[in-house]
Length: 340
Image 1 (cartoon, rainbow, N blue to C red):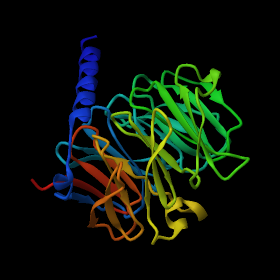
Image 2 (image 1 turned 45 degrees about the vertical axis):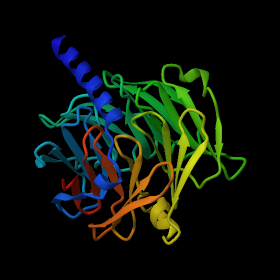
Image 3 (image 1 turned 135 degrees about the vertical axis):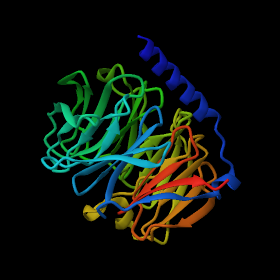
């Protein structure tokens, strides 16, 4: 009980810190690479940071998973999943336990203890590749969306599917808001070229979305909500669009006119680029096919700075929820901190 109380207090402290943390343009420009991990040279598929902010996990397309201590900047361990591979990886509410989707297009999720390298539970039901997955910020439930045109809700305590939304477009993607009370789904409108955003109450999916927004943009390959809950970011090829998370109004567009659309969008079998919000929600960091990383202002879409570091495209980025630290992944994993 005491441990649960401490965990609750830590989560509340992290939320308060991330809402107060302000970076500013000058501090943003001070970021530089602090640690570089080349590992096997395989592409980084996914990066996640634990809810308490102490650890970072990355998956690579050689079936490997890597756990790092954020505070020391050291790697703790490397594990392999040779049977199913590792694609999307998310921390549970324990910093040594994750959920991960397979890299064999089987639609399987495994609950994995990194402490003793044991698979604690396996979740089956999808019949095609899982294209988005996230833990609820408030409890032990998580959702998955799949190319089998369904969303499924799961609970870590049982392998049975808890709820399902069927008959979705095949490339629908989702994300929770920071409270875990709202689940956003993005999908293509079958009757037009527009995208549809549907917010659901996470406790009552059967009632359907409580509103539907139409957005004029390319197909959405992923979404994130800022830590302050104000902004919904859609990443879709050459366009990163920011919406008001409460009203669905478009606030800004980030666009790369000089890039090949297929190299960013994930078409033709390539991995789409995944940007990230800064902890205060005021900035967005994204990689480019050139290997560069760019930081934009969220609302004005003004380019603040651009760094040269990676020699191959850094397709995955993730900001620490409460510290001035972010990570970028290509065939290398790089930790970034400001040189103060």
